[in-house]
Image (cartoon, rainbow, N blue to C red; front, side, top):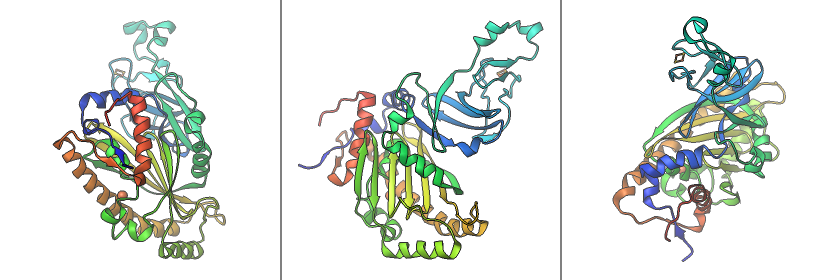
Length: 367
Ligand code: FES
Ligand SMILES: [Fe+2]
């Protein structure tokens, strides 16, 4: 048999495994949290959940830190929005914090708390490792581990290129899927499903063939585009005057373990997705489209952005919904028996994803 077994069904719904995943997969690996331009100004912040930790990434007078987003006083959430611009001050009793997480202000300290410098220091917020690759920001919760460049290996240079080239935001959205986060990731790791799931969308856009590369749990899948979409992109670029990246051709797809996926269309448009676990059987898919900027104007005009948005917003929504429906059906059926599914050669990127996951989880499975 050429095929191998997929993960055991329990990996997609078991609560204990889900708890273990939070620390062994999400807190130990570098997790993509956003782009540096989201934190360009003093007090700009973004928040996210990594494993069990609520994390705030914030600009403090030009330098960026990743801190636990939980007040040391009585545990209120410090920054309650997904992004914004606000000093790091607790909304409950107004304790404030500095860039290294140290307490800087405690109202009524002298009369009611009596915290000296050492007492304040002991109440510092935990600071997490933060590194950048081009304009992409990654956070690692675990104290020790590889550097971002060691973790990404050959993908470091690729992501650097991508993040510094596709800088014009076009659209972003968040979708809720009733699936384990791994089932969501698996929908983008093979093109075997394209004929069945996307006959009127992706199948008309790209061919159901894929050239694959790997590094640890990260992988690449390059899929040739059909002639029609290529013509459309050539026409659109000429007419609307925007760029094509010299290096990226056709449909280039990158998966960065554990939960980041990037698709590039004809070197002009980037779609980026992260799959954030919510419960063992639900996840949030954060989606954004970005494009190459124009060489003529430093920034892409509103007309170009509107044209691309009009063409791709609906297209991407339909594709994502097609994937969601089929993924949710797999999730519902996962507990119907304990027999693992099968992975063919064409699903090799999923095998690499699973190997990295098995290694992190030290998960043994009979096959
Ligand atoms: S909980 Fe934050 S200041 Fe009280
Ligand atoms: Fe799909």
